[in-house]
Structures are given as structure tokens and as C-alpha cells.
Amino acid sequence: MSAKTDVKAYRGFFTVTLICLFVLYAPLIVVTVYSFNDSLSITVWQGVSLRWYADVFTGVESAKFKTAAFNSFSIALIAATVSTLIAIASATALVRAGRFRLRLPSMGLIMLPIMVPEIVLAVATLIFFNSIGFTRGYLTILVAHISFCIPFAFLPIQARMQGIEDTYEQAAMDLYASRAQAFRRVLLPLMVPGIISGFLLAFIVSLDDFIITNFVKGAGVETLPTAIFGSVKQGIKPNIMAISTMLLAVSVIFVAVSYLAAKWDNTKSHLKTDPAR
Amino acid sequence: MAGGGVHASSGPVAETYARARHQLLIPAWAVLLIFVAVPVAMMLIYSFLTKEFRGGVIWEFSLAAYDQFFFDRGLFGDEPPKFEWTYVTIFWRSIWQAGLATILSLLIGFPTAYFIATRPEKTRAIWLFLVTIPYWVNLLIRTVSMKFLLRDQGPMNDALLALGVLEEPLRIINTNLAVQLGLFYSYLPFMVLPIYAAVERYNFTYSEAAADLYASKWATLRRVVLPVVKPGVIAGCILVFVPSLGAFLAPDLLGGAKNFMIGSLIEEQFKGNAGNWPFGAAASMILLTLVIIVLLISTTQQRKTREPG
Image (cartoon, rainbow over all chains, first blue to last red; front, side, top):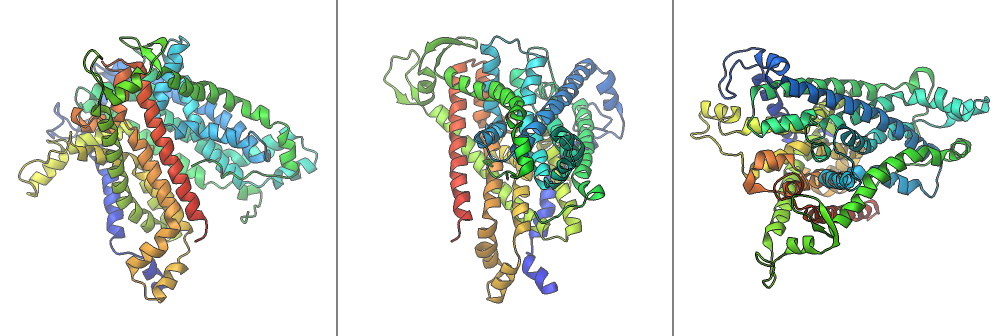
């Protein structure tokens, strides 16, 4: 065995991996640490305190951040829900319904928001809403988010559905289940981990978006990223680091849940699958 | 990437679902046609319209936007056209910056992906998890964190000065290097994941065979491993290069005014003082064309590697 690992192993690759992780985490750790700094200045360390966390909720800018947080989370929740439902329907047609003429064009259309650079999509959406005379605001952000979240919800759902053989549904239908029953009682429960992953990915992508939101939001409507960006333009302030750390915590919770969802193989719990597909 | 690789089922279940397939696709078609495809088409139309001062357009056909991009006709537009370098330079700088960020990501990302893929199966998931966590953290927050860390009086300079490594603080913010580091930091997980997937599928008996035939380790890596995992490497490079090309946050927050990239140029036409919508639409069309060219080249490359030989 040792000779085998020798062939695989390259000296230095481990060091590069450590550098990689260091680069990825150093900025996040530094900001987290400095968010607890009890100082008006971001350069001087003055001991540990929660004053900037208190400032986020009660300070001068708290009203702005509360509205922005409400907008961000409500938009992410609605956009992720709607795009997940659309993605489930599309995945069922594209994975389960055999080959048909509109199959590849549909696949291309669903991937379009990922293929087009974000800034181009932002410009196009702004031009569209402007030319139909739609007032920019909460609703335009929501609609834009629903459309660009679809591919992110679709990918994990489609991957999961491909991994589930249709023999279960076939068995259900052989036993006189209707198509709707086979879908709802057999396929859908097996799909749950993929659906959770797709929903969470769409939610995070919506929460993360700055460029498109910045273009299609009206005057006065802010989400967390646009509010933070506006604030950072005048220099990084300690309260921004406190908000960043809280959002970071939200992200980490989401990764943990999606990681568990991806590992959760519920096909084995009550049905046996053939791994060789 | 092309989305054509999804396997379609067949058989009795497929026949049952087939009757509903168009209804199932209607919501996706409706949303994506109306809010993505039609807007992109309208952007193309806008790039051929006349600009309205302070934003918006006049519905009159005009090539002025593309003309302004490539030619300089003087302040009043009556001088003989000279080639305009301003915008071509911004595009060239963006390609260059995105390219360097991609190379940097590859140099760090490949060894990382390879290292993770050769771990025992149990620890592999943990390593992979560690690399993907930052991807889930808000991009704006990551970029702001990077700016905070790299500042002239930031923690990195403080630490290096305190350790005596430096005499004077490194001035990284507002340089090209800061933008490259920002782009690299933004999209590094996109490089690691596809390469990891390719190396994980790689059959290491090839490496053993090469070693048996007295190939050196680096020759094995370069001439045996690399050709096999090339599709993963190309996919990773595309996934870093394409978003870097149109990136807005990293150049805007880390680069400053001297290191203007395409994203900022376009943004300024709509949000900033420039207010020239047809020109912004034309610049977006040129960016989109560039991206399509990159994607076409990469798919032909991918196809080549899949064919034996």
C-alpha cells in the first residue's frame, strides 16, 4: 500500500492546500475577530466588547439595516420557494419524460441565467423593466431573483432525480397507483434531500446577490448587500463588521444543513437501490 | 456546462410522464423567456438606439454606441475618426486581470484539488467541506473582508511590521495585484471543485504504470495525470475566468479608479454620472460576445479531449 500512496503523493501539494485554506479563511477570521473590538477606530484594538452588535440593532443606522434585512430575507425566502417549485416541475419533465424536441432548448433556457455574465443580466433586466414602464422596487427585485435562482435550484434537484431509478414509480403504477400518486408518494419523498439542497442554494444565491439587485432596485429600497455596499463606500465601519459576522454565521448554518441534506441518503432507509446505474 | 449531458429516461414511466411534460415546463419557459431571454434581446435593440441625456433612450436607430466604443471623432464629432483606445484598453485590462486571476487560482487550486482527491474517503469530505464553506459566504462580505485585511494600516501589514518582516507597510489596495487577489479569492472554489471531481475519477494504476516505466513524478503528473483530468481543469478555468471578466465588486472595492474594469464601465452608464444607456448596452453586448467565444472554444477543447488519441 505504501508504494501506491507514494505514486499518488506529491511533495508540496499539502503545503499548497494549507496556503489555499489560509487565504480562504484569513480575511473572514480577521473580520470576525475585529467585530468584537471595543474601539471607534477599526485600526486600534481596545479589548473585547459586543458594542458594535448592539449598535447594529439600536444605533443610528439600525432602522436602515432592519428594513434591508427584512427585504433580503423575505425576497430570498419567496424567490427560493418559487424557483424550487419551478425547478421540480422542469426536472421531472427533463429527467423523467423521455426525449422530445423541446428538451435541449429547455435545458439551455434553464441554464441561461448562469451562462450570461451577471452584469449583463443586470443591464438587460433594468432595460426590460424600464421599457415596459414598470416602477422599480421590491417587486422588480423579487422577479429578477426568482428567474436567476431557477438554475441553482434546478441543478441539485435534477442530479438527485437522475440518481433515483424509475423502477419504484413503475412498481407503484403496476400496483394501480395513478401518475400523480406515484409522483407524490414515491418520487417526491425520495427527492427530499435534492429539494432541500436546491432550495438552500437558491436561498443563499438570492441573499448573496448584489449586482442585479443594485440595478433593478428602486430609489430607497435596499437589501442587505446594497445597504452594506453603500455604507462601505464611505469606509469600513465597525458595525459593518458586526453585520458581516452575523451573515457569516447564517451562511455557516446553511452549509451545515445542506451538507447534511446531501449526505442523507433516504433511498436506503426504506427502499433498496441498485448503485450500479 | 452546455447542459446537454442530462440522461433522459425511457420506458413505461417515461411514457406516462411524457403526456404532462409540456405543462411541467410552462412555468420555467414563461419566467425565463419573459424575464431573461426577452430582456437580453431588448438589450441588443437598445445598443442600436440613440441616447437620452440623463439615462434612457430615444427610439431612433443609431450606431453611435458602437462608434463611440471604437472611434474618437473629437469633441463635436466632426473630426476624422481616430481609433479610440480608452474602452478597448478597459476590456483588454479586464481580460488580462481575469486571466491572471485564473492562473493564480489554477496554481493554488490544482494541488489543493489533487491533494483532497487523494485523501482517504473519510477525510476527503471534510477537506472538501472546508474549501466550499467560503463559497456560501456573501461575496460582498468576502470582498470587504479582503479589503479590511489588505489595507495599508490593516492587520496583515500590522502583523508583518510587528514581526519585522517589513520596514514599511505593503501598499496593495488600489493596485492590479489587489484586484487579482480579490478575483482569485472570489472564485477559487469554482476551480477546486471540477478538478477534484476529475482527479477523483482518475485511475491511479496509470500513474503506477508510468512509475514502473521509470517516469519521474513530474513527468507522470504532466504527461499522464494532466491529459486525463484536462476536462476538469478547463471547466475550472472557465468557471473562474468568465465571472472574473464581468466582475464588479472586486475591481470596484479593491482596485480604485485607476484599475477600472468592464463591470465598472457598464455600471457607470446606468447608475453613475455617465448615463449613456445605449453605450452601456453596447458594452454589455461586447462582453456577452466575448463570453460566448470563450465558451465555444472551451466546448471544442472539451470535445477534443473526450475523443481518443
